[in-house]
Length: 103
Image 1 (cartoon, rainbow, N blue to C red):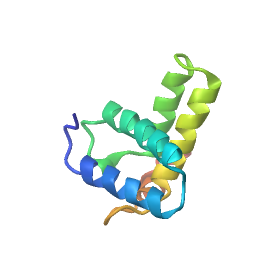
Image 2 (tube, helix red, strand yellow; image 1 turned 90 degrees about the vertical axis):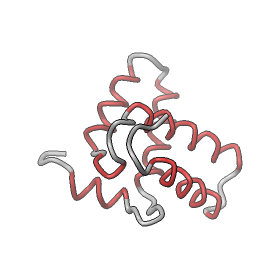
Image 3 (cartoon, rainbow, N blue to C red; image 1 turned 60 degrees about the horizontal axis):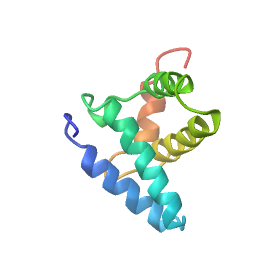
Image 4 (tube, rainbow, N blue to C red; image 1 turned 135 degrees about the vertical axis):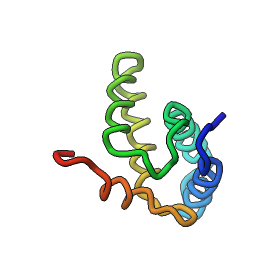
């Protein structure tokens, strides 16, 4: 499934963070599913190399394939995922720090 090292651990940490945040099980399932799809799309990249530009490119691509509501839900999942520190990774911080000028 994932070519780069670290994705299973990151997803597991995300799942745990969602559980302790008190979200409903159905919401957690949706966030995990949406996040898995995003990470599979960029599976060749190590998790910490994903930038805001990657997220924007992915959402822009889906904009032409999916409904606006579905893209919005994917956007919510990515915001949640990249905003929660996960088992030794603070992905949200890393995205902001690695963001190219103008992002």
